Length: 517
Image: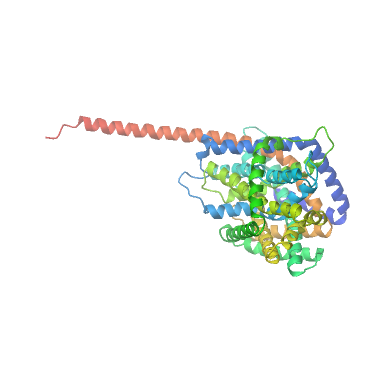
């Protein structure tokens, strides 16, 4: 039933986007504007609350609980695990926005800053850290933890609804269908939007490296080729396709980052990282709860609230995938691995690429701000063009985006297959292929109709009801964690009681024995 309903909604939107793309875009834009203005405060509070919940779970007494049997070992090594969750979580976004976002904020800064000034540059880096740091990864982590906990400790199917269905209220079990349908729709549209964005940047990279013209035809062809690649990877399974590609991509990303760090303004990058980390820590709460009730400024809604809604919309997809590859880890290890580690990696990435871009814009007069205004997808390659080994780095970056593209599509088909087959952890290859073709078809049809922006907006719109689902998941997770902790303490006390009983019995037996002559 959930497959029929979700596929039906997706098909209707696709047809609508082909027949009347302007109508689709206009309605979704109006909905987006209404949601960001009316419910912006809700997104801010919910996401900050998830950061707090993640911290409490990691550093409390509940952190020692294992996602699985007590003697169970993790399925993947720490390196492979981190590579997969990083690639599925936001790898392609970091490549796309690593240069573009700081430069965008430099030219159009947050309220209270003057454009293209040192203050705007500092704010640009701080908000880039903020948008890609603890908050999004906390959203992913808590959703993934709720799914993993019920799957691996309660033997429930790998579905988003497993947490909400455990709540002790009469109406809670009846939410399962609606929750799973929302998760499937958000995932399908989110992945379709990602395919469209990835195609744009790959096309820009091929243009700079090989002179391939930037056109809709080229972008459609890129989607077709990359779909074939990620479906080939998908049918090989998680332990081979996704793991190998994620490991390769992590190495490529590290090599590219180190190269830019060494070739670029190294000392400036270190200074940027240091001062931005300090300002991020000092302004953490203020940025987390910042709105503009006394001034007419849409910056917060266009960036922060948009991002928070985007991460929430993506949380069922990323959460299910992270849960799938995290069996055998403790809650503490899980939270630290899914929040702190990728956050630190993101900080390094933005410091190197964003810091280098701002330095070149301010001190070397490289027209990066103009490039971002003209075409956001070209920002990274314009920066490389002004550096030594620029062509080589553009080629590596294009390959990096391509592989991130493949891993995102690969993991997405896995998750969609799991959700549409009742939580089957290893869905049949045929199911993965169907979903891969369907998502690629959504991306191509909306690209042809000029609706990629509309599908991004649609993803955000679906995030509002899922925000309430996340609140219910947190309540269910906290109840379940407390229950399991009490049960484990009870078993430990019972074990100690039995050990004392047998020890006392043995001592009494020895005491009653006559002394040996």
